[in-house]
Length: 143
Figure 1 (cartoon, rainbow, N blue to C red):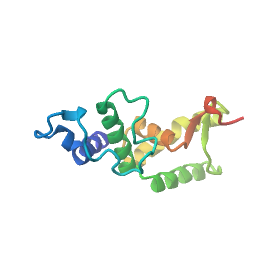
Figure 2 (cartoon, rainbow, N blue to C red):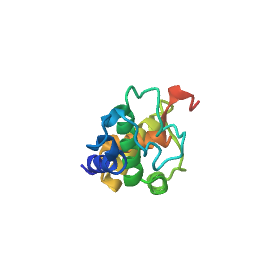
Figure 3 (spheres, rainbow, N blue to C red):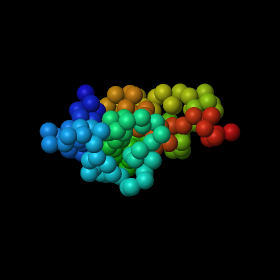
């Protein structure tokens, strides 16, 4: 619920002009805030080949900014360090498919993060993947 609430709040903050009564084009029209809270050209925030419509882009923008507000990168990285300290391991990127331990950590770390930041396991997993704290071996990481 926290993530959904923040996601909808982000729409209100940066996309409300797209839905304003005086915007005859609606969400398909041009709106001023397409690069709010991220550098112009940032891959997570600008138009992507995955975006078929402006609505797709607005949804991705709301997800990106909501995750950043609820799970800020510095705090999330500190939580990851705490997680590894608990297991007496050196903090590192978790690479799925390289070892049974990494596969277990890839499940446990999002669960831990979700409890700390009071978000869903899915939201925590996606944020950890976006920050490349958890990656898949098939993408060129690992042995």
